[in-house]
Amino acid sequence: MKKSDKLLLAVFLVLIPVTLFIGGKLPGKGYYITGIAVITELCAPFFASFEKSKPQARELAVLAVMCALAVAGRIVIPIPHFKAVFALIMLTGISFGANAGFIVGAAAAFLSNFFYGQGAYMPWQMMAYGAGGMIAGFAFCNFKFPKKPWIMAVFGFFATVFWIGPLLDCSHMFLAMPEISLASLAASLASGFPVNISQGVCTAITMLVFGKPLIEKLDRIKLKYGISEAENGL
Amino acid sequence: MSERSIDNSMKQDAFSKYHPAVNLLFFAGAVCLGALFRHPAYLIAAMCSSLLYFFALNGLKALKTILVLLPTLIFITLINPLLNTRGNTVLFLIFKRPYTLEALIYGAVVACIFFITVIWVNCFGKLFTADRIICLFGNILPNLCLLLAASGRILPKLIENSKQIATARSSIGKGGEKEAIKDKLALRFKILSALTSVSLENSIVTGDSMKARGFAAGKRTSFKPYRMTYCDWLAAGIMTAMLAAVFGVLLGGFAYAEYFPGFGIAEMNGRNIAGVLIYSGYLLIPSALQIKEKIRWSISRYGI
Image 1 (cartoon, rainbow over the protein chains, first blue to last red):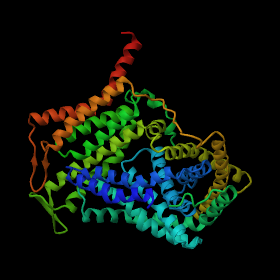
Image 2 (image 1 turned 180 degrees about the vertical axis):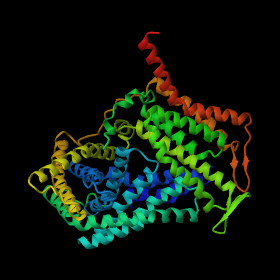
Image 3 (image 1 turned 30 degrees about the vertical axis):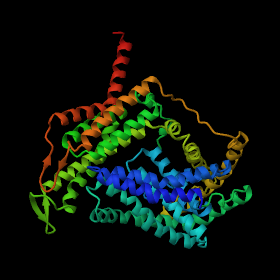
Image 4 (image 1 turned 90 degrees about the vertical axis):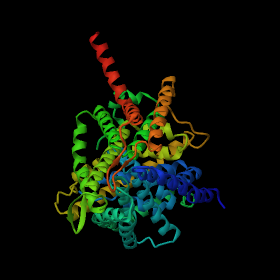
């Protein structure tokens, strides 16, 4: 058993249940604090394995560019309500593996909060964006989905609507809803659904138009300068 | 695009002269306590002090943020009774479900907590510039911090580059003055594509340059302009003591506040008065420091 696997098991079997147990006893809106604590614990194994993987300077620089590109998408494509950020994060995950996808997603969420003002939703955004990059990495690197534009577009749509979107909408329940219950979860998810659909469409369009060129560019960089995906894969 | 990372206005804030760890301790305490209290007295104390510091940091610009938040607060207040039908005093029936006074008041409490959290997190974001974050986490997560710092540098450059590409395209007649959204989108994707190629190539140069300067050659240290001084330790000690006192009142159950089925709110006895005073004292620390600084500045300026 690898060390990182042990850490992951320790987090899931010990740390999170203990946090939930203590968090359940807190008065008031203790669940907001508990939520942040659990997200931090979920992110910790990814960050730890990123530190352990000792990325080369070139890899780090490429990941930094992808992260900045995901945030800059909003400025480069100044069309209202058009968000390319999920697609760019997922493409990073597809090209560099699940772990790199998570790191770039989380970093992009942090960076965009940093530039546009910190919001109370930041931990959920980091988790959701990271999870988006991670699931794309799993699907296309570990399970070898074919990297065809239309497959990526369909995948991007469903991943946005049923994975990233709901994870983001959860934050409403923790922050703005009076209690944690199925009813408030349903209300949060329902209120976010139309936005998720529109963002899913944006993701699909970006994947369809920009997916193949970007993958080719990244593959070329990897081939030309010898940045291997195996080192960064989960 | 606001270049917040190179915003120098923070230099004027007195609290930001303390070590980032002290600042982090303060905000962690303020956000935690803000989310945990449901007692009206504590809520009012937290609202007033968070607003005071918010205005001290942002000036009149803060009003805009508050106005933007207001509809959300009203929405949270009004939506709670629809989800939650507990409570004794029924105001009216809606969708055949009771709309109760207790649920409405509790909605207002939740809206207050939401407001306090958002304001504190906003202040936190204003105070925590890139150098402070790297100072705090640079040793624990060196690669992640480097990634963040690097992409924070690349982001403004990317935006500048994208403008250059757009100008270059339009000067050879490919600027796309067409109005249709499809053409606009296609044009923008072309710019994004060119931008990606350029910046990926540049990133390799950056990476090689980093390696040539000894990246990963040994243990990395990070530049820290902050040091824990006597003052910082003192501030941290005082804050911890105050936090312990307030947490004692909270977890001891003295500041209980029940809203269902009827109101059951703790009286303002000695313990709670002391609790509110210590709590407000804690939350007012940054504002007080700033006011002290302002007074000192005006005294030195006018030579009183």
